[in-house]
Image 1 (cartoon, rainbow, N blue to C red):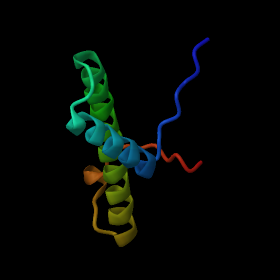
Image 2: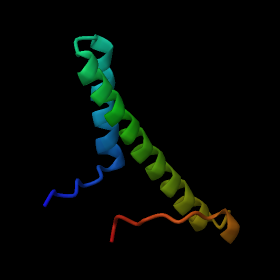
Image 3: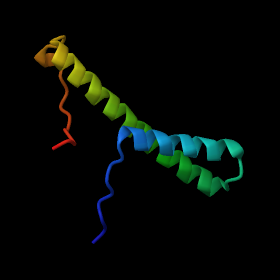
Length: 79
C-alpha cells in the first residue's frame, strides 16, 4: 500500500521551490527532468498559495474583519 506523502509546511515548500528554480535556471537538466521539476514546482506553488490563504483568513477572523460569506473552508493542520 503506497504511503500518503505528508504535505510540506509553507517554509519547507518554499525552500524546495527555491531549490527547483535554481536547478532549472542552471539548465543542466534533461527535458524530462525539467518537466518533472516544473510539475513539482506547480504543486509546491499551490501548497504555498493555500497556506497563505489560510493564514489570511485566520488573521481576518481574529481581527473581526470578515463576514461569514467571505470565509472559505480550510483544514487546520495543527490538530
